Length: 196
Image (cartoon, rainbow, N blue to C red; front, side):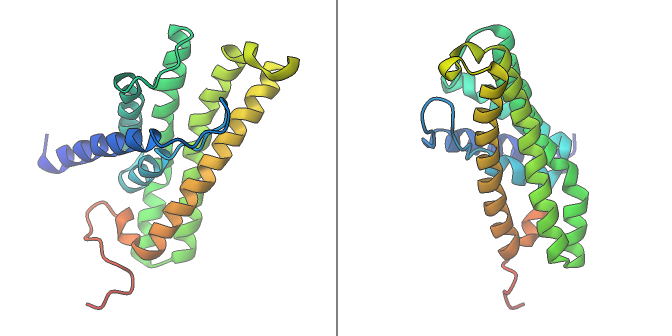
């Protein structure tokens, strides 16, 4: 393994650790709604490095929930879906890696910001789809006042997923506006308006 490739995987592990630390910050309202702040570094890393590194970092992030005692256990299949599949799929924000890098290199701010928002929503949708599935299959018995498990999971996971995507997109766009080079894997990072 080359040192450059090793650096990518080490960076992914550091990002996963940062994501789990941010997950410890309480952002929940009630038992079913929360904003997942860990999506911010994971999404930015996936956009910077690509889909496979993003998936790797997401998997590590999911596994770290076990080490920190942040796992709600109903069954083995529920845990596999919510902590391994869901967090792994968050790495699909990396699907826009090439378009984002190209936009930075061309100095096309409008395209850059559009791709960042799209990537953020793709990663969030991919992750929260699995939380939605788990909500229907495993958590439906806890639905409010006889609400159908489908509607309950759609509302709760949809609200959390949307809020997470919006917060993540705002931070990622803010960073891109000031430090677009962050989205290029091998570039020095300096402010946009810094004199050379």
